[in-house]
Amino acid sequence: MQDIKEFSFYVDDCVLKQVENWQNWLSGERRMSWHTTQSYLIDLKEFFIFLFGVYKKKPLTLSILEGITVTQFRSFLVDRSQKQISRSSLARNMSSLRNFYRYLKRHNVLNNTAISVVRSARPPRTLPKPLGLEETLALLHRAFTMQKEKWQGLRDVALLTLLYGCGLRISEALGLTMADWQKSTDALVVRGKGNKERLVPLLPLVKKTMAAYLAERPADLAGDDTVFIGARGEALNPGVVQRQVRRLRTNLGLPATVTPHALRHSFATHLLSAGTDLKSVQELLGHASLSATQRYTEVDTVHLQQVYDHAHPRAHAK
Image 1 (cartoon, rainbow, N blue to C red):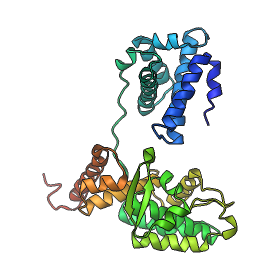
Image 2: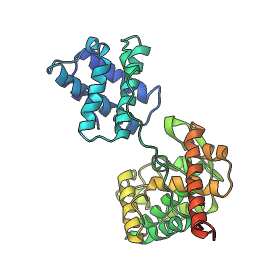
Image 3: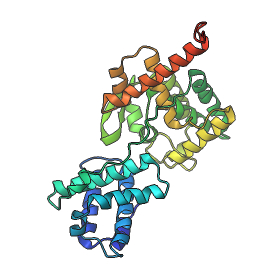
């Protein structure tokens, strides 16, 4: 967890106050998740550490931040690149800085025009890597056998089926409360990024695996309000789920791209392959932009080309 007090080593009290205000604005008005807010703060701290060295370990002031030049912003990117930071991380670094400076301008604290000129390298475009249908089913079937306790095996099956059957992000599934589930019948209200709600239909298989898990969920451990709990009754940690999926993919001989989030990719890709229209898939995934959903059409096209190359009798004709 990023502690705001750690910034005080690099900045004066005025800048520290603005960082705190920015954090509250991100989580409050912008409704960004805790993880996203933390990532923004870490990026800003890296920038302050760099400037702290440039200004000979002099606490940074608002005046200094307003006067940062294009060259200094670019020097920061070069410094990060030399530390073998990936292009996607560099792009996120600059996105965080732009957000901070936009906040300062919007609230009439300062205005730095140089940052709008700086362009970091675009991250390489990558396509989602879904599982095939047989791989997905194998993962769901094997999950039950990988736990010693019956209720934990049923929990893992229910969780992975929910991720695949409803296309949820892992944070959305683990944030699901008992009250949320008890209100659901044929559809589930999901709170996604920015606390936006969407309605996702519940497949019979999802309801069946959830019912089996909840029937075995230990009453003496059910103190937490979340549906999915850990061994001591606490809200289930994403790291525990990710570790369990790593065990599953190793056991089944699946590639390293098989993660909890890959089940969401599989949900979208399999729907499009079955003829579901793009707009409906966008709504089910909770994407703000249609362009984010369009990536899955490219995945489907690549898959169809591979099938064609493998199966068509004239695919390899010279």
